[in-house]
View 1 (cartoon, one colour):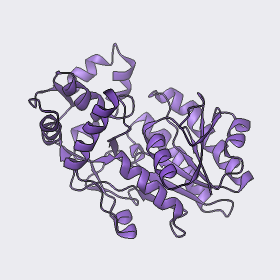
View 2 (cartoon, rainbow, N blue to C red):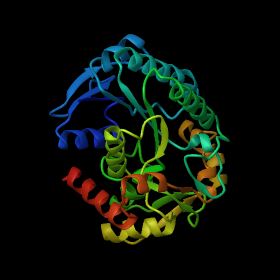
View 3 (cartoon, rainbow, N blue to C red):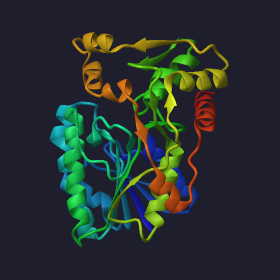
View 4 (tube, rainbow, N blue to C red):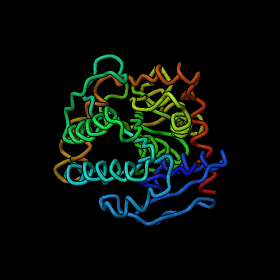
Length: 312
């Protein structure tokens, strides 16, 4: 089988690439930069272009859409639906199956567990975009044109993460390893689920190889219960060998910062995820595949080992 990753080069794309290659699969990577990994075919392509998308998926059996766009709701509104439609139509033309790697922004503020049946109630502009593109894919699931999976994850941490793709990497691991204070947004005592990146890669591969997983939404394997910020920082500091010092980026601080920073402005509308409990549930996946996600202690340890090896 040929596995094609659209939007290669990010944390999930990289973890999935290595997982596929370890399994002896044929892998093609499609990105604007023609990102390359030894053992995989690399193709340059712009997913907002249908012709590029079609060339990227040609001769593919499984297509994973793992693209990430700049963290800007205007760019998301402009480009995401175009990318989804291009990918769907290209997969139909070449008769490939499609797995879309998704987040949880469309759920909005949720009381209790986020599950695959949680209704869409976005409370942010980016969440509205994610709900729109999720509905496009769900509409496709009801047709007979191609098989589709929506695979969702909570906020990410783990090997292959970067400051651009993982908030814990940027605010906790990177700061502590540079001798700085860790940072946390809003409320350090609130429980918050994080999905371990290698569990995402394992989950995507298991879904791709399963005959009965298609045309469904799946939450990728994520440890439960959720972890609070103090505990997360404490585990990271212990593993690095430093004191667990931290500072809080309060809501008022973020409100002030958004006047001067585009990144802070885009992050502010998502602050509800840190102000309130955030419980992501992957029971459906765990039970179906008899899978046990990495716990936070082992996940944080592996993440720091990965970062240290990368910087040596």
